[in-house]
Image (cartoon, rainbow, N blue to C red; front, top):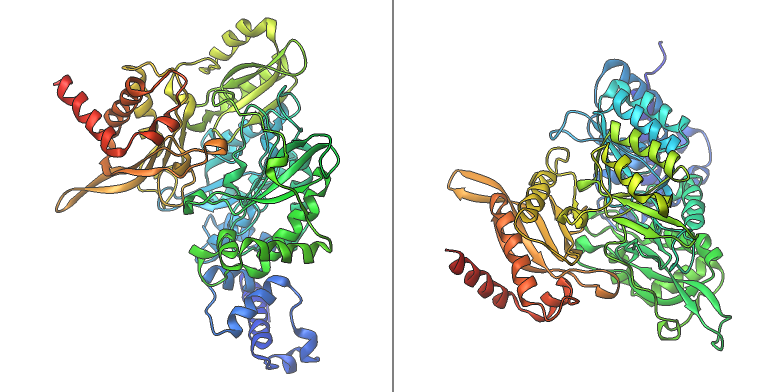
Length: 591
């Protein structure tokens, strides 16, 4: 008999593992005779299998993704991936989901291709790596990259025959995509100005890096009930929006004379998921920065055991916290830690410095005298491979060879000589880029949209640029206004924290016809302005959004109490009805 194919081997492994799961749940030795041993010895010690078995024992049905994880080890797909590459075919069924463990997303029907999502801890990479990614974008993708809202890169239009070559090239660059998709801890984010920011309380990059490698090297922390986000915020000028993450560590300073030694600590926030209209909540806990690995691991292990494996919509950590209560959850974390968490009131911490909403764009002085970071505008995150190579060259020639990605879909080049800003600007312009702009684009966020994502209802990036171009030609906006466009309720662009948030939808224009459009939200914020945006209008056609955003900004500029009043505070004191009345009055005056 010939050897089994990789597909057949994986099927048999899944059959055995699935029967083991059922036996453990029901207490019956289904396979002990076949396996030729003691049935107790065959019981899985994998914590994920044990968590799944508890749901099965309760008579609940696992979601297909959980069954797929139980049947196949997602990190043992290499032979299958080689077969698909050789035959130039895409995976099918739940194998599409398992490929996301390798950072490869089959995005049909939007594109008959893979999208690759990387892992770049803290968003920091070198000029050599950026130059290498540019070459990979030309060789294996579509000649471009996209900066994401997790300070990360995505490359698109990768064909199945090129997947293994892509992964090998990535590894040889010192980068990885392992666990960047599916039910895993996603890219660990931090303050993009870490180490150079004069107002930061702590450099977060060492902690991002430590946690990144800790996750990569603990296989049992993959395959969680759902995806999981972790962020560090050091108190610098550019926020990491840690309060939108499942775990947010944000730096605080404690002065002399308190019940703990003076110094800088991380406060702990848990349960952020703005797509489900919730922010991470301060847990009344501080920790020494060096404790973050043990605390993160303990939290992840509680979530691993407690998270729902039968309902994908309620499998995020927010729902574990809602079900258990925050204090009971922390008690279980302490059990995992084997030590109590340190409770300390937020009121006893010094006030945190506020971020600069334009700190990610333009030139800003660093803590090292004579140096600035250059915040480069990358409209809705897209860069060509030539621009990537150009930025790598600029980082080498004008900076220190570093590039920092931000959650605002742009990048920074640190360590530029302040005396050479004008020359740097000219060099940047040669690549069609700028660090100085009055455009609305500098606070514009857009998800991939329906040109590359099967879930999206609208072409978010194109519509975002259309809005910015329309407004920029007609209106000077002298205050930062965050505009977030997201194509579906997954909210990858976090529309609920935008000053103006747009959620993609389909709008009926006749009995038989629909067009792309958006539900519009107002007044979102993060940090000290933390707020879920409120609904404003439903089902606005995409073609009408530029005029609507222009009108909203005019109402704000004309109605604010002073130039210092932000859009967030303006919409906090002015009702939807008052804004609608002002819009109507403006339209009548224009006609």
